[in-house]
Image 1: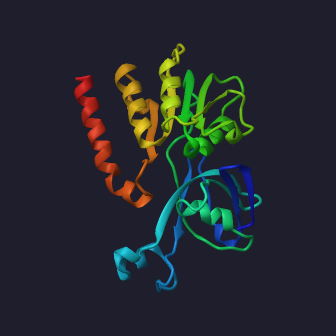
Image 2: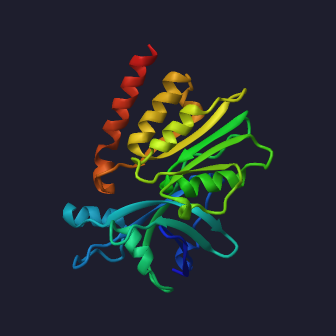
Length: 261
């Protein structure tokens, strides 16, 4: 780890570097992600360390914990990888690690993966998400020309959580409302411009489900025009969400098929 920066009261930027990134490469996507690997204390892991070796030789309850983070920026020339962490005190695993990280600290990492970049063929772009999707939305905006037609909505807790981003962003302040409520209202109220939209909608699974139905069923958008997924789910940790996410997606797909038939 090279350095950290508190961007807002609840967002910490961590810049990673070193020889471990010598083979790191991205491919032009704006939602590239990596999985950070957090070892459990007191567990003897195989050497040299690898996830596959752990899963073969270590009991499941002692496997390392994985946390997924969007690549905010990758500077290949400097060999610097920037990740932004949502931080709420001692809550969670990765946030507290980022808050306590010091230059020279080491962490294992898998990736990168990813699957989205704004289509140059789209007539306009819809970008919508909460804090967890903010890095990917920011990266998407930076990749788009200034004259591209974009409607970008980012929901954060309050004005102190706003960042200096593209002026095309509409900031939505959650306050005491449920996560995603302001975002759903804003996207539903949007009058869709002429032309084919390319949409990126990510964040808490509950509001993502509502907006996915809005775009797929009410507006009839095909999946080819959407990058839409629940990054996390309220009340469930990352391991628990990964265990049920596939079934959750299949249920949504079946409901949509029924509604569209």
